[in-house]
Length: 307
Ligand SMILES: Nc1nc2c(ncn2[C@@H]2O[C@H](COP(=O)(O)OP(=O)(O)OP(=O)(O)O)[C@@H](O)[C@H]2O)c(=O)[nH]1
Ligand SMILES: [Mg+2]
Ligand SMILES: [Zn+2]
Image 1 (tube, rainbow, N blue to C red):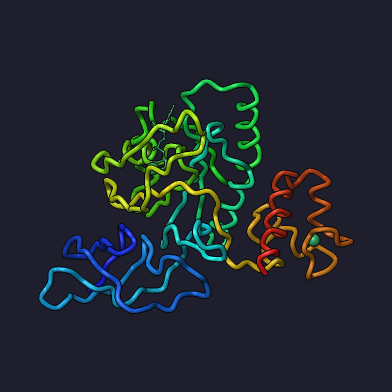
Image 2 (cartoon, rainbow, N blue to C red):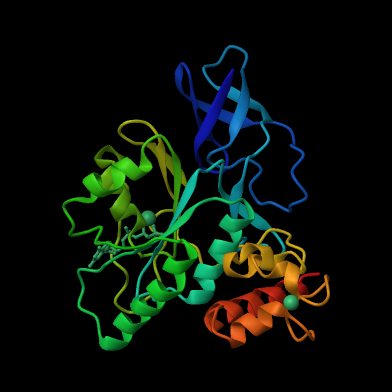
Protein backbone atom coordinates (compact mmCIF):
# COMPACT_ATOMS: atom_id res chain seq x y z
CA UNK A 1 0.00 0.00 0.00
CA UNK A 2 1.16 3.53 -0.76
CA UNK A 3 0.62 6.66 1.28
CA UNK A 4 1.87 10.10 2.22
CA UNK A 5 3.40 11.02 5.56
CA UNK A 6 1.35 13.83 7.04
CA UNK A 7 2.81 13.89 10.55
CA UNK A 8 5.91 12.58 12.20
CA UNK A 9 6.70 12.55 15.88
CA UNK A 10 10.07 10.90 15.50
CA UNK A 11 9.06 7.33 16.23
CA UNK A 12 5.56 7.20 14.74
CA UNK A 13 4.38 8.44 11.39
CA UNK A 14 0.80 9.24 10.46
CA UNK A 15 0.35 8.22 6.85
CA UNK A 16 -2.59 9.15 4.65
CA UNK A 17 -3.61 6.28 2.40
CA UNK A 18 -6.52 5.60 0.07
CA UNK A 19 -8.16 3.73 2.90
CA UNK A 20 -7.66 6.42 5.48
CA UNK A 21 -5.09 7.44 8.06
CA UNK A 22 -2.78 4.77 9.46
CA UNK A 23 -0.04 4.78 12.08
CA UNK A 24 3.32 3.51 10.95
CA UNK A 25 6.70 2.67 12.32
CA UNK A 26 10.00 2.55 10.60
CA UNK A 27 12.10 -0.53 10.31
CA UNK A 28 15.53 -0.79 8.83
CA UNK A 29 17.57 1.95 7.26
CA UNK A 30 16.95 3.93 4.11
CA UNK A 31 19.52 5.05 1.67
CA UNK A 32 19.38 8.82 1.60
CA UNK A 33 20.55 11.34 -0.92
CA UNK A 34 24.11 12.36 0.01
CA UNK A 35 22.80 14.18 3.10
CA UNK A 36 23.50 13.63 6.75
CA UNK A 37 20.00 13.69 8.14
CA UNK A 38 18.54 13.59 11.60
CA UNK A 39 15.19 12.43 10.20
CA UNK A 40 15.05 9.66 7.62
CA UNK A 41 11.38 10.23 6.84
CA UNK A 42 9.80 13.66 6.55
CA UNK A 43 6.33 15.12 6.31
CA UNK A 44 5.33 15.12 2.65
CA UNK A 45 7.18 11.93 1.78
CA UNK A 46 5.44 9.30 -0.31
CA UNK A 47 6.05 5.87 1.19
CA UNK A 48 5.29 2.20 0.67
CA UNK A 49 3.71 0.40 3.60
CA UNK A 50 3.32 -3.14 4.80
CA UNK A 51 0.91 -4.30 7.48
CA UNK A 52 2.47 -5.65 10.66
CA UNK A 53 1.52 -9.22 11.35
CA UNK A 54 -1.60 -9.49 13.51
CA UNK A 55 -1.63 -5.80 14.31
CA UNK A 56 -3.47 -2.75 13.10
CA UNK A 57 -0.27 -0.83 12.49
CA UNK A 58 2.00 -0.62 9.46
CA UNK A 59 5.69 -0.52 8.71
CA UNK A 60 7.27 1.88 6.24
CA UNK A 61 9.15 -0.33 3.81
CA UNK A 62 10.30 2.17 1.27
CA UNK A 63 10.34 5.85 0.44
CA UNK A 64 9.67 7.10 -3.08
CA UNK A 65 12.14 9.60 -4.55
CA UNK A 66 11.59 13.13 -3.27
CA UNK A 67 10.75 15.72 -5.87
CA UNK A 68 12.15 18.41 -3.58
CA UNK A 69 12.63 19.28 0.08
CA UNK A 70 13.54 22.13 2.40
CA UNK A 71 16.05 21.56 5.18
CA UNK A 72 17.17 23.33 8.29
CA UNK A 73 20.34 22.92 10.26
CA UNK A 74 20.10 20.38 13.02
CA UNK A 75 19.96 22.03 16.43
CA UNK A 76 21.66 19.09 18.09
CA UNK A 77 24.25 17.84 15.65
CA UNK A 78 26.38 20.16 13.58
CA UNK A 79 26.87 19.09 9.96
CA UNK A 80 23.53 17.35 10.15
CA UNK A 81 20.39 18.58 8.48
CA UNK A 82 16.75 18.04 9.23
CA UNK A 83 14.22 17.84 6.41
CA UNK A 84 11.39 20.22 7.21
CA UNK A 85 9.09 18.87 4.50
CA UNK A 86 9.23 17.32 1.05
CA UNK A 87 7.30 17.23 -2.22
CA UNK A 88 5.98 20.76 -1.92
CA UNK A 89 4.41 22.86 -4.66
CA UNK A 90 4.89 26.28 -3.14
CA UNK A 91 6.42 27.85 -0.06
CA UNK A 92 5.27 30.67 2.20
CA UNK A 93 7.89 32.31 4.35
CA UNK A 94 6.15 34.10 7.20
CA UNK A 95 8.12 37.00 8.61
CA UNK A 96 7.60 39.82 11.10
CA UNK A 97 9.08 43.31 11.28
CA UNK A 98 9.79 43.15 15.00
CA UNK A 99 9.62 40.81 17.99
CA UNK A 100 11.22 38.89 16.34
CA UNK A 101 12.48 40.82 13.30
CA UNK A 102 13.22 38.49 10.42
CA UNK A 103 16.55 39.37 8.81
CA UNK A 104 17.19 39.72 5.10
CA UNK A 105 19.91 37.09 5.38
CA UNK A 106 17.38 34.61 6.70
CA UNK A 107 14.95 35.40 3.90
CA UNK A 108 17.69 34.96 1.31
CA UNK A 109 18.79 31.59 2.66
CA UNK A 110 15.21 30.42 2.38
CA UNK A 111 14.94 31.69 -1.18
CA UNK A 112 18.17 29.96 -2.18
CA UNK A 113 16.65 26.71 -0.91
CA UNK A 114 13.41 27.17 -2.81
CA UNK A 115 15.18 28.38 -5.99
CA UNK A 116 17.43 25.34 -6.03
CA UNK A 117 14.27 23.31 -6.71
CA UNK A 118 12.40 26.06 -8.54
CA UNK A 119 9.70 26.05 -5.87
CA UNK A 120 7.60 29.25 -6.12
CA UNK A 121 7.92 31.27 -2.91
CA UNK A 122 6.00 34.13 -1.33
CA UNK A 123 6.75 36.28 1.68
CA UNK A 124 3.94 36.83 4.18
CA UNK A 125 4.57 39.81 6.43
CA UNK A 126 2.42 39.03 9.44
CA UNK A 127 1.17 41.10 12.40
CA UNK A 128 0.44 44.12 10.24
CA UNK A 129 -2.35 45.04 12.68
CA UNK A 130 0.32 46.25 15.12
CA UNK A 131 1.63 49.80 15.34
CA UNK A 132 5.12 50.17 13.99
CA UNK A 133 7.82 52.78 14.27
CA UNK A 134 9.11 54.49 11.14
CA UNK A 135 12.24 52.38 11.11
CA UNK A 136 10.18 49.18 11.03
CA UNK A 137 8.03 50.53 8.22
CA UNK A 138 11.15 51.48 6.31
CA UNK A 139 12.27 47.89 6.70
CA UNK A 140 8.96 46.75 5.22
CA UNK A 141 9.50 49.14 2.33
CA UNK A 142 12.98 47.68 1.73
CA UNK A 143 11.56 44.16 1.72
CA UNK A 144 8.96 45.10 -0.87
CA UNK A 145 11.46 46.95 -3.00
CA UNK A 146 13.94 44.09 -2.92
CA UNK A 147 11.72 41.03 -3.37
CA UNK A 148 8.72 42.07 -5.43
CA UNK A 149 10.75 42.94 -8.54
CA UNK A 150 12.41 39.52 -8.27
CA UNK A 151 9.05 37.81 -8.57
CA UNK A 152 8.47 36.97 -4.91
CA UNK A 153 5.07 38.31 -3.85
CA UNK A 154 5.20 40.22 -0.55
CA UNK A 155 1.82 40.02 1.18
CA UNK A 156 1.01 42.06 4.27
CA UNK A 157 -1.39 40.20 6.51
CA UNK A 158 -2.76 39.88 10.00
CA UNK A 159 -3.32 36.24 10.84
CA UNK A 160 -4.89 37.30 14.12
CA UNK A 161 -7.20 40.13 13.06
CA UNK A 162 -8.00 39.75 9.37
CA UNK A 163 -11.41 38.27 8.62
CA UNK A 164 -10.89 37.63 4.90
CA UNK A 165 -7.96 35.21 5.05
CA UNK A 166 -9.95 32.34 3.61
CA UNK A 167 -11.20 34.41 0.69
CA UNK A 168 -7.68 35.62 0.02
CA UNK A 169 -5.74 32.40 0.46
CA UNK A 170 -7.93 29.37 -0.26
CA UNK A 171 -7.82 30.00 -4.02
CA UNK A 172 -4.02 30.23 -3.83
CA UNK A 173 -3.70 27.04 -1.80
CA UNK A 174 -6.25 24.93 -3.61
CA UNK A 175 -4.90 21.65 -4.97
CA UNK A 176 -1.35 22.35 -3.83
CA UNK A 177 0.98 21.30 -1.05
CA UNK A 178 2.10 24.52 0.60
CA UNK A 179 4.90 24.79 3.14
CA UNK A 180 4.55 27.44 5.83
CA UNK A 181 7.85 28.30 7.46
CA UNK A 182 9.53 31.06 9.46
CA UNK A 183 10.93 31.93 12.89
CA UNK A 184 9.19 30.81 16.04
CA UNK A 185 6.46 33.21 17.13
CA UNK A 186 5.76 34.87 13.77
CA UNK A 187 2.22 33.44 13.69
CA UNK A 188 2.33 30.36 11.46
CA UNK A 189 -0.06 28.30 13.56
CA UNK A 190 -2.38 31.27 14.02
CA UNK A 191 -2.56 31.57 10.23
CA UNK A 192 -3.14 27.85 9.77
CA UNK A 193 -5.95 27.82 12.34
CA UNK A 194 -7.75 30.55 10.40
CA UNK A 195 -7.56 28.59 7.17
CA UNK A 196 -8.16 25.15 8.64
CA UNK A 197 -10.27 25.71 11.78
CA UNK A 198 -10.37 21.94 12.50
CA UNK A 199 -6.58 22.02 12.90
CA UNK A 200 -6.69 23.74 16.28
CA UNK A 201 -2.94 24.03 16.46
CA UNK A 202 -1.64 25.42 19.72
CA UNK A 203 -0.41 29.01 19.56
CA UNK A 204 1.41 30.84 22.26
CA UNK A 205 2.30 34.35 23.20
CA UNK A 206 5.95 35.22 22.93
CA UNK A 207 7.53 35.63 26.35
CA UNK A 208 7.69 39.23 27.50
CA UNK A 209 11.23 38.67 28.66
CA UNK A 210 12.55 37.22 25.50
CA UNK A 211 11.58 38.09 21.97
CA UNK A 212 12.64 34.64 20.90
CA UNK A 213 9.77 32.34 20.19
CA UNK A 214 9.03 29.48 22.51
CA UNK A 215 8.61 26.80 19.83
CA UNK A 216 4.96 26.14 20.41
CA UNK A 217 4.76 23.86 17.39
CA UNK A 218 7.24 21.02 17.76
CA UNK A 219 6.47 18.76 14.79
CA UNK A 220 5.71 19.52 11.19
CA UNK A 221 2.22 18.49 10.18
CA UNK A 222 0.20 18.62 6.97
CA UNK A 223 -3.41 19.70 7.13
CA UNK A 224 -5.90 19.07 4.33
CA UNK A 225 -7.62 22.21 3.14
CA UNK A 226 -11.01 22.80 1.57
CA UNK A 227 -11.09 22.02 -2.16
CA UNK A 228 -8.02 19.79 -1.91
CA UNK A 229 -4.41 20.49 -1.13
CA UNK A 230 -2.44 20.67 2.07
CA UNK A 231 -0.97 23.38 4.26
CA UNK A 232 2.07 22.32 6.28
CA UNK A 233 2.54 23.95 9.67
CA UNK A 234 6.12 23.66 10.89
CA UNK A 235 8.07 24.45 14.05
CA UNK A 236 9.82 27.82 14.00
CA UNK A 237 13.39 27.64 12.82
CA UNK A 238 16.54 29.61 13.54
CA UNK A 239 18.42 28.87 10.35
CA UNK A 240 17.73 27.16 7.08
CA UNK A 241 20.29 24.74 5.80
CA UNK A 242 21.58 25.12 2.31
CA UNK A 243 21.85 21.95 0.30
CA UNK A 244 25.25 20.97 -0.82
CA UNK A 245 25.56 23.78 -3.33
CA UNK A 246 28.78 24.19 -5.23
CA UNK A 247 30.35 27.63 -4.83
CA UNK A 248 30.14 28.18 -8.59
CA UNK A 249 26.50 27.20 -8.54
CA UNK A 250 25.20 29.47 -5.77
CA UNK A 251 24.65 32.47 -8.05
CA UNK A 252 22.19 30.41 -10.10
CA UNK A 253 19.84 30.54 -7.14
CA UNK A 254 19.84 34.34 -7.00
CA UNK A 255 17.29 35.07 -9.73
CA UNK A 256 18.64 38.53 -10.52
CA UNK A 257 22.17 37.15 -11.08
CA UNK A 258 21.10 34.32 -13.31
CA UNK A 259 20.70 36.40 -16.44
CA UNK A 260 24.25 37.81 -16.26
CA UNK A 261 26.05 34.57 -15.51
CA UNK A 262 27.29 33.86 -19.01
CA UNK A 263 28.75 37.34 -19.26
CA UNK A 264 31.64 37.26 -16.79
CA UNK A 265 35.14 37.18 -18.30
CA UNK A 266 35.99 33.87 -16.62
CA UNK A 267 33.58 30.99 -16.75
CA UNK A 268 34.60 29.88 -13.26
CA UNK A 269 33.82 33.32 -11.81
CA UNK A 270 32.54 33.35 -8.22
CA UNK A 271 31.62 37.04 -8.53
CA UNK A 272 33.75 38.06 -5.55
CA UNK A 273 36.62 40.14 -6.95
CA UNK A 274 37.39 38.66 -10.36
CA UNK A 275 38.26 41.09 -13.16
CA UNK A 276 35.57 41.47 -15.80
CA UNK A 277 32.82 40.16 -13.52
CA UNK A 278 29.43 41.13 -14.91
CA UNK A 279 27.66 40.49 -11.60
CA UNK A 280 29.93 42.95 -9.77
CA UNK A 281 29.35 45.47 -12.53
CA UNK A 282 25.59 45.09 -12.16
CA UNK A 283 25.83 45.54 -8.38
CA UNK A 284 27.79 48.73 -8.96
CA UNK A 285 25.30 50.00 -11.50
CA UNK A 286 22.39 49.30 -9.17
CA UNK A 287 20.74 46.46 -11.07
CA UNK A 288 21.48 43.99 -8.29
CA UNK A 289 20.53 45.09 -4.80
CA UNK A 290 23.55 45.48 -2.50
CA UNK A 291 21.75 43.70 0.36
CA UNK A 292 21.13 40.71 -1.87
CA UNK A 293 24.75 40.73 -2.94
CA UNK A 294 25.77 40.82 0.77
CA UNK A 295 23.65 37.74 1.38
CA UNK A 296 25.25 36.04 -1.59
CA UNK A 297 28.74 36.68 -0.19
CA UNK A 298 27.71 35.60 3.31
CA UNK A 299 26.27 32.32 2.12
CA UNK A 300 29.20 31.71 -0.22
CA UNK A 301 31.85 32.05 2.49
CA UNK A 302 29.83 30.52 5.28
CA UNK A 303 29.24 27.44 3.17
CA UNK A 304 32.93 27.37 2.33
CA UNK A 305 33.75 26.84 6.01
CA UNK A 306 31.95 23.54 5.97
CA UNK A 307 34.07 22.03 3.25
N1 LIG B 1 -0.71 41.20 16.76
C1 LIG B 1 -0.67 40.03 16.15
N2 LIG B 1 -0.27 38.94 16.83
C2 LIG B 1 -0.26 37.76 16.16
C3 LIG B 1 -0.64 37.65 14.80
N3 LIG B 1 -0.50 36.37 14.43
C4 LIG B 1 -0.06 35.69 15.50
N4 LIG B 1 0.09 36.52 16.56
C5 LIG B 1 0.51 36.16 17.91
O1 LIG B 1 1.87 35.73 17.89
C6 LIG B 1 2.08 34.72 18.88
C7 LIG B 1 2.74 33.52 18.24
O2 LIG B 1 1.84 32.93 17.31
P1 LIG B 1 1.96 31.41 16.83
O3 LIG B 1 0.90 31.22 15.78
O4 LIG B 1 1.98 30.48 17.98
O5 LIG B 1 3.40 31.43 16.15
P2 LIG B 1 4.19 30.25 15.38
O6 LIG B 1 4.84 30.87 14.22
O7 LIG B 1 3.26 29.11 15.12
O8 LIG B 1 5.31 29.82 16.45
P3 LIG B 1 6.05 28.38 16.63
O9 LIG B 1 5.01 27.33 16.64
O10 LIG B 1 6.79 28.50 17.92
O11 LIG B 1 6.99 28.27 15.46
C8 LIG B 1 0.70 34.41 19.47
O12 LIG B 1 0.58 35.14 20.68
C9 LIG B 1 -0.26 34.95 18.43
O13 LIG B 1 -1.51 35.34 18.97
C10 LIG B 1 -1.07 38.85 14.13
O14 LIG B 1 -1.43 38.86 12.95
N5 LIG B 1 -1.06 39.98 14.86
MG1 LIG C 1 3.31 27.14 15.63
ZN1 LIG D 1 31.30 37.10 -12.13
